[in-house]
Image (tube, rainbow, N blue to C red; front, side):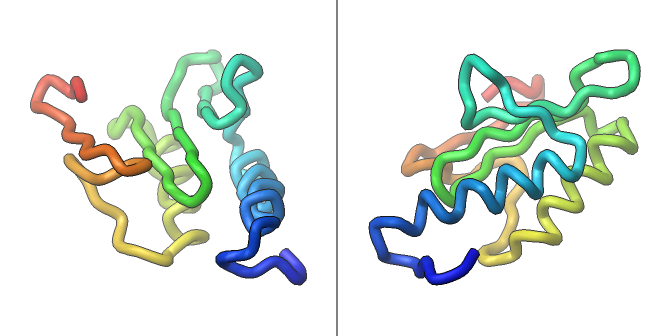
Length: 105
């Protein structure tokens, strides 16, 4: 990103191409039905991960037994380290989200 800064009205628009490129380069695919949702498929087209994005809030989930998912999610966490990543419960776009033991939210 060049010339866009936090707090400017153009910042979200400049931010979107950066995260889109980062996700795509790491194997994530953007959904056509909702372009704020990205999925990670293995070589058998099995869903291994999903990311929801709202401006600078990410919510990531996936198959924790999958090396593909673990490596891809770690790459995203390594790229964007502005706050602590949390697990199990967090705030996403102003809503408190908690994952239960049965993996429902």
